[in-house]
Amino acid sequence: MKALVRYDDQAYAWRVEEMDEPVCGPEEVKIKVAYAGICGSDLHMYHGVFIVPGKFVSGHEFSGTIAEIGEQVTGFMVGERVTVEHTYSTCGVCKVCRKGSYQLCKERKSIGFDVNGAFAEYLTVRPEYIHRLPKNVSLKEAGLSEPLACAVHAVELIKPEPFDRVLVIGPGPIGLLTALTFMAHQAKVDIVGTPNDGLRLDKAREMGISVIENPEEDAYSIVAECSGSQGGMNLALKSVERGGQYLQVGIAGKPVSLDFDAPLYKELNIQGTYCHNYASWEKTIDYLSRGLIDVKPLISKVIALEDWKEAIEELDQQKALKILIGFGSAEDEQ
Ligand SMILES: [Zn+2]
Ligand SMILES: [Zn+2]
Image (cartoon, rainbow, N blue to C red; front, side):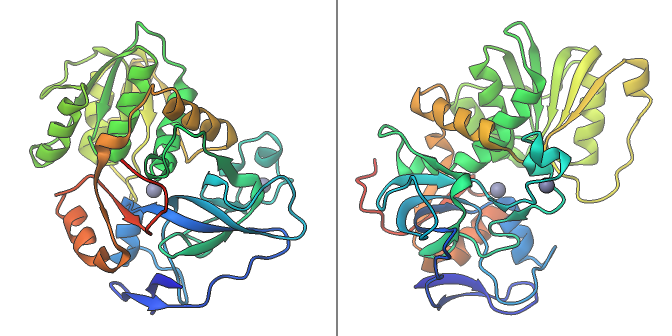
């Protein structure tokens, strides 16, 4: 099969190679990938911000069809249209696993981070993380179910009310999806970016999200920080109202300097959010199926695997929002 392989333990050592199809273990399901989204963390891997040793295939946002079922797996059929969580496995016995928050398991292994991912024609997954797609959810939009599940999980931790006034900081794909998810809860949402975010803010307007330049101080009952930048975090602490909720969605990836007296003086509730779990995925697919959130405008384009390099360059230069690698799905996509 064709795969985009990181062939050496260093930055930029990616190329399309012919490799053996993965063998479907007795407790696994083999997926034929239809669409795989390129995410910011894939770009980090390409740039060598973090390196997984050995030959490796990235890609953790994908949809596809079931190609083969391990002999110990029941309940699935070849040909079913699915999307899959990027959790590959967890310990299953620690406290967070048993409470259902297995995304927090210290032993969690992730598809595209710890085991080979979806920038390939096939990959193998475990059945407990597969979600079937309803007929009215296309494989293409399901290619965005992972980032949407991140947003859905973030918002469900906050439990917004229709009267909430929400500020989203950072209009990247996760910021836009977080804004759309809050809007699906009837909250009043503003989004703010930097002067470099022109294309992203245009997309926000196109999707009916209110774009503002200078958020009011002490004005928002919920602020979702989706940029992961120090400036964004300090802006969030400023614009959240007294007694409000601060939601950290973006990853800084390094220590930052914050006015951390603000949570004290304002009696803020600080909420972190990490990935997603079964419940957030089922809700995500429900949102898509009921048309409550439309992710299609976020798809800048679909490319062939061979065109991965131009796509990464476009994403690096913020000339595109979400690019999907298409593997020639038989489904007639709009
Ligand atoms: Zn991602
Ligand atoms: Zn565990």
